[in-house]
Image 1 (cartoon, rainbow over the protein chains, first blue to last red):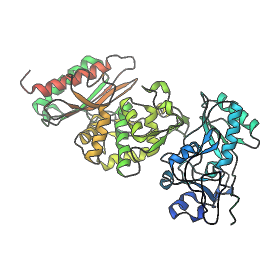
Image 2 (image 1 turned 90 degrees about the horizontal axis):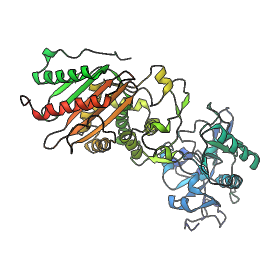
Image 3 (image 1 turned 180 degrees about the vertical axis):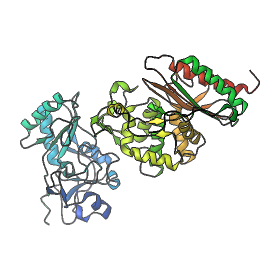
Image 4 (image 1 turned 135 degrees about the horizontal axis):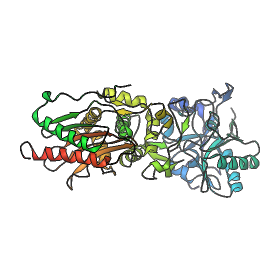
Amino acid sequence: MSDPAPFAEVGGMSEAPNFPLRVVDGLTLPPEYRKALRPGEEWKDATGFPRQLPRYFYEVPSWDSAMKIELASHFLLWEFIQVDVREAPPLRTFPRYVPCAITLLAVCLERFRDAVGTLVHISANGGYRSPSHRFSKNATPHAWGTAANIYRIGDTYLDNRSAIERFSLIARQTLPGIWTRPYGTPTGYAEDHLHLDLGYVLSVPRDVKS
Amino acid sequence: MPKKEAPAPAATEMVPREHELREQVEKIEKESGAQAIAVALRDGETGLELHYHGDRWFHAASTIKVPILLGVFAAIDRGELLPHSRVHVRNRFLSVVENIPFRVESGRDANSAVHNAIGKMMRVDELAYHMITTSSNLATNLLLGVIGPDAVNRTLKELHVDRGIELRRGVEDELAFEKGISNMVTADGLLKILVMLSEGKAFSPALSRRMMDILHGQEFNQGIPARLPKGTRVAHKTGEISTVAHDAGVIYLPKRKPYVLVILTEWDPAASGRSRTIAAISHTIYEYLTQGPGDE
């Protein structure tokens, strides 16, 4: 939490002084970022229903800061922003931008961790990924910062029906309104991780007036 | 589908030395019990070439990882990838048959480094190293997932390797195997790639050298290197499934230019002596090249 990154006002906004990341309006970002993040745009989900993408983001200045910033007692920011070569090139270098709703996901995962009583590991590409990520074919809550793919809990790999269904049940019992992907191989199912999400939640920081 | 077998060139077309070497390989083949053997050789020192059933097609087994390595470095050359680009390690792939998901069994990879990273990320150069040196199938499919088989095939065309390599899918795609969809190679096809690498002509001398460095790290040395003198350096790639055993590489001996050798063999699944046969052919060729004509 000692990262010196500023939380200065941007575009008339400021963020609470106890959180070290500044909020940015995605519409004010340079074109290459706007193209990749598509702030505020509509994006259709797999059923064809339009969803509105996040417009406000936390700016993450460096990997070093991501390694230090706690989003919850047992979750650091870096765990939510690990993406591989399939992410759009501008979004693989710093500063990085992550939707403001990421903090809600972190709180939920902290509560889930309490319930399972051990470490919860988010996979690479399994936290926030942009709508331009090569895995993002339709609107997915991953692009809202409200979904996590969990591949391991403690020493248990979630790569089989028994483990996935057991922890899925715990998640649903612990987190009202959470959605978990059912076990299976067809599209919309998962058989090598537990996917959980809060839906297409938009978080608009308090100081944003527009 | 490529034709299954092509006749070897007639003996009358060959120079006497090549004819002599061909007879020796033929003798080893007869004694081995192998169903088929192909050998391709190009000696950088003397210019001698041998193409013994060089255009016969074989199941590629893990030798297909050499063209895939070429495809990865083509992406690096184009700036689409960096050696330190990170790749999500996930053990889930889609068969070319109806996109049915499959996994790579951890027991099939010689070390557990890549499997231990499931859920995390590994660098492109780390995956390339594991793909070649311990023949990691998981690393292979991950890299192929990033670059795509079509890109590898385009690369081969751009490098004028238009015959002798058929990349059709990732590895351990059992459904595809059952349907007869397999990666195929000829000895001549692999020879062309390895000659290009050894001469520094794949993209650039620097990138060729990086690929050769990876091939030098090969940990399976029961084939081509097994009966060569101590101190011989061999940059190579093996490949083995129930019905084939291959080895393809570049052999560096002191005080002479290297030679490139590809040995492909096909067997009854119950047969033994595969590595011994490859080692015997390699040793015969070594002796032939180093003793010179008339020394025997």
